[in-house]
Length: 209
Ligand SMILES: Cc1cc2nc3c(=O)[nH]c(=O)nc-3n(C[C@H](O)[C@H](O)[C@H](O)COP(=O)(O)O)c2cc1C
Image (cartoon, rainbow, N blue to C red; front, top):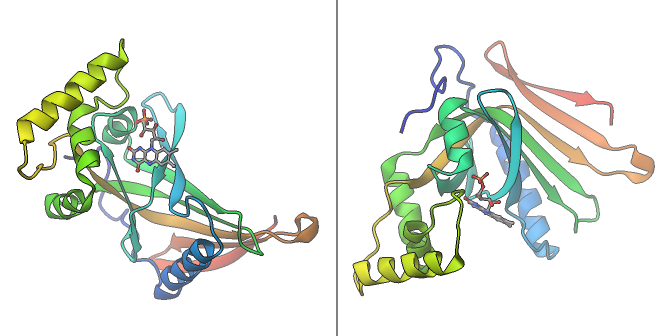
């Protein structure tokens, strides 16, 4: 899988600062402990060739110094948009913490390796693996019975054996060049900490709320 513009020379930001990654995981752990129902859910914005944005929720499966990883059908609407414009933005919102938190990121997107995608796919429940084969994600579905039929066909095809990762299902890694932590404060005097990759360095600044 190659994505347009994903590897322009000189445009790849450096790894995220360790402290930022640690802060993210600490906040995520607190959100989980606070009972956040979908702590890894994030809005993912992609753009069509004409510049029109579209947004949907996906699950963040991994965040480390190399960026944010999510998985999907590569032939889906988002997958097709990423094939044309390898840029994306994300937003997460943890509402159950004392201090509400939003984390936003923007940057280029690249495919994860086949090995990485295979390992994650094999960790998924079998029903999700079958679903990945059966769903023509984002395509029109004239009759829900057709989807059931495709599920039954995939179940027959793999029987009791392992379900391999479909060729049209994989992961993407967003390598942020901009990442912001927003902390909700009373009277909308929110705190915004922005990290940007500039002149070959990560720089931290504050923004008005
Ligand atoms: C909580 C939640 C989590 C979701 N997680 C994923 C995900 O990880 N991957 C995915 O492809 N779709 C996920 N979806 C479905 C997407 O929001 C979307 O409907 C689907 O990916 C098709 O989007 P597209 O047509 O823009 O490509 C999730 C939806 C919700 C509400």
